Image (cartoon, rainbow, N blue to C red; front, side, top):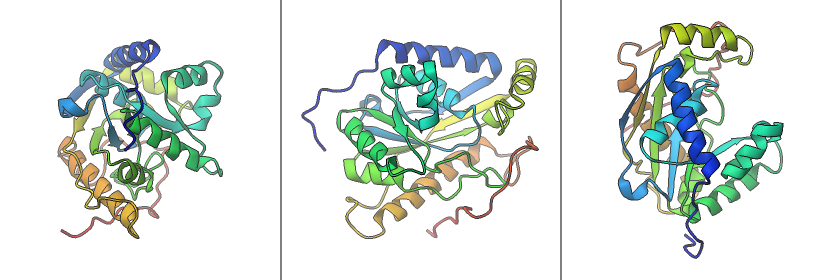
Length: 257
């Protein structure tokens, strides 16, 4: 890893946004954060790999990170960066643009690798989308998170969350006002747990299939970290979003021990 760069420092706008996110999540839900990241990793280099279940996830993850004194840089879809005010704020805060479905998508991994080399914490959703598994378990992941970790030699910590899907519907902004009003009244419980670093089982990305195997290990770890957060919902979630489609094509098959 290149260690000649000065360590990245979160700008004031991002530190303020972390506090704001925690306040907003606290207004709409009861946030319960368990687990932790070792103190020496909180400022990076580190990859946080989270499951993706709702449009409300990013706000939840930012709020949870704030409770653990972590200021992650988020790999986010390019559409957010094109928004007039939000895009400028995200660029200033140091987040990383991902142009999905274009030839520029590989630039995001290069940018993330440079950020990790500078000592940043990167938050990434290894599934690459809001998961569409019918049981809302982590689905088969993309290899970006694993390749980033293998290239940089950075540890990967799984961060599982449960409950954000009760705040905003899958089709948000459609139905968003109704979801927010319901959450203000009910304040659903959202659980977030920082798990133990994942043993990727490879020291380099050079060996054939290493990224795929490491990705499966990350998704396995996310699944194991998520299970205790939903003990009474082992198969299907209680809260059913009628606008959420199902897709069985990326169901994750857990590797054998």
